[in-house]
Length: 222
Image (tube, one colour):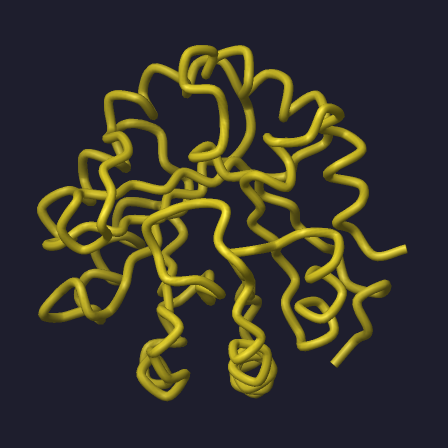
């Protein structure tokens, strides 16, 4: 495993922490500040105990930025909405295996639409649950908090899971991004990267900072 300073580290600010009254301006500012992706958390009040936004918001923002839209579906069921988010401008669509009856088929559907497909692991979801789907997976996202709300504290129990997934991804020989979301700050990022992650999703640590560019730079390894 390459040390963090030798890997390209992707920074994906989470729109959930932005000022919803100024979304167009917030997206432009985060792109200018050096973000690699824009992470969009979609919640339905059912799978996750919160309600955020749907494909209409993605479509409205899509024409104002070139950033890849990294869409995290925290909804149940997943399959009926994949096409709508693809049409709205999603570049990546990730979902929780627990949220659909046939996650393998859902991955096939996402990829058939020309989008990158991702699997998301809740804190209690074991890495082994996705072992037989890595051949169709472009992104693995580890939730280092329970999904639903920003500003939660990072769960150190997820570090061994990140390391285990790093080993599984390396063994697969595929270029799969290993992302972590939840409590990511300049204090927690080094351990996450050392465990093997290459993509950091951060909400309040970026959108809650006065200097977006400085906040993004602070998450990258020295």
